[in-house]
Image (cartoon, rainbow, N blue to C red; front, top):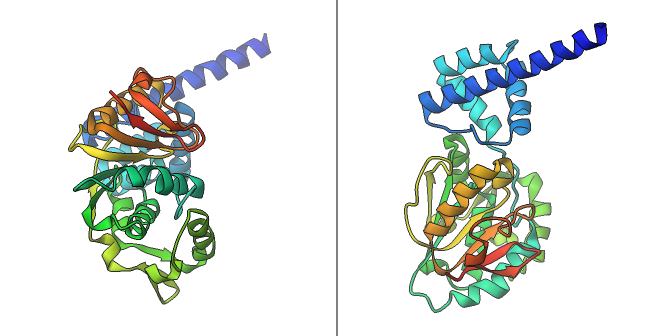
Length: 284
């Protein structure tokens, strides 16, 4: 009897917690326009409780009150929701494949548009700029780097990284087929690394919400790597449709190593260039 009562109470608490999270996410959407309602529940739950403890609060409802009345608290929660796991030339084999197999197919274009969706703090964007520079394509390319978080975008625009990461990034650069000295792309100032300004010349950083915003241009290449793993199936389908509508015919889509297009409604619209690197070409 006691065991049954404990089980019933646990189930009740779980249902109440889900309701509180739903109300929090609905409030964020209605008040700020950020829609996290179709993100993976378990991931959101962990991040919500992290923010509750960090704000010295005791409940999800308490966090909701703070979030709706304080943009500063909302910004901190948004930072928790926006997964910031990135590095220069992350997954070097992806960048090597893109350099060797994809860029030669773009050389004859008069102008190249690339959308890097979910760019975080910009490490992979600058990696792409370096790669294009080395292949002689940067001058005729415009990279649109977007993220839902203004905080992360501001960091990306600065192009400043801790020098402690340069050893790992240099190894990634070499594995990605780098043809120069990686240190030639940055200056060291007071223990920080500042990218050369010319790498920013053809990059436009802008806020864009994959969940609620629409297509804003036609692109030859779209990168969205390790972002959709945090979306549920409905939201993944919505974003894949957005990318399909944004890609020109024969355009290229690059996904993260844990993502795929094979089980989507649009799979037949792409040619798979690499199973391992998750690179696809739009064929219809």
